[in-house]
Image (cartoon, rainbow, N blue to C red):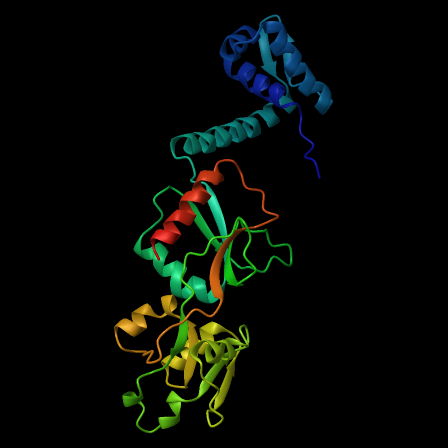
Length: 287
């Protein structure tokens, strides 16, 4: 609903007249003619249906309505002036909203932001890929993309390198099956099938199977010794480096990449275009 407010210029003129005590003084302060100031104040009085100033031979005095309105006007103008001055002195960085797959955010993007902030002054807002329930469409989407789904505007910062990882068997003397149990992520149901094709092997019928809702839980299952999970090499580098996980079969391309795609329906402000370009370049450099 539109706010029901009196004419803005008239409010400013009324405050100036009250502060100066004369129309002449207010006109000098506002760099307007005296007639223009008088018209603007009169417009407010007409809008409110009551006079704000009494024009006496001795000068101008506030009416009861004017005396009630003046402190409210002064406070509002002071608050607005203070807020705008802060913005002029400390302009806000452009805010780039990035919708990211949860496991990518947790294991890749957030650590990257913490280790090496983007070079350009930018406020990065991480949000969900889900745009339902009135959520705003992000400027960029970071999600998994299969081969053949690429678009002219998408870019892939991480390599297509996946493989089975698990906790070192030496740490599991009471659970020898931990190295053969296959952990499936329902968010990528054919991961093991792709691996078997790429590695030239077949599924071990004796292997146990565990199903997880998503890749984050599958990785966690591998970390605690539940079994083997197909994961992207880029997301488990720290665990491989310190020996918490091992990948004895190595990593292979499985036709799946992380894609950064500008959202189709997002309105990209002009100020964010170079920020977005630099942010994508920074992501690629950090990989």
